[in-house]
Length: 203
Image (cartoon, rainbow, N blue to C red):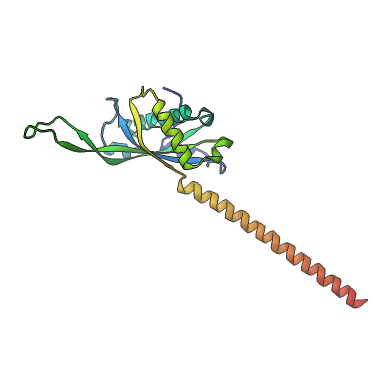
């Protein structure tokens, strides 16, 4: 298993606020689990960050994402972090061998969907679109040897709302500062002009 940086919810609270310039992508994926040591289907235990079920699955989920990132684009994986891991139930159809009127029926089971934030502190990541990042993860996922018994499927990525909001807030603050500077400059020039006119009048 490759090294990973994973933080549970308690550890996240102890981490200093993320640097504002660190590109962050939210990764959402349905988990295709083949490891019998991991939960095969949705369990309420996965909502509790202190349970072994959550801790083990979160660690392997993060490892799978970061491994896919490394295989898809090695230069982006340096110092990448996986945080804010959550799991939710998702409907998945599995064909089970149940004899009902001599036919096989589809049995509906709740599968597991994982969500995590991936922070990539490299200049190259700032140029990435969500589409490009998704392609990188999918490419690496296809190359994975799946030793952990977990595969990512139906991968979707986006920029987290809080991160987008921070960027917008910074831009708004910068715009506000610029407007203040412009207004001060206009007032300064106006006063200089009035002072010059007053001197000319006195002469």
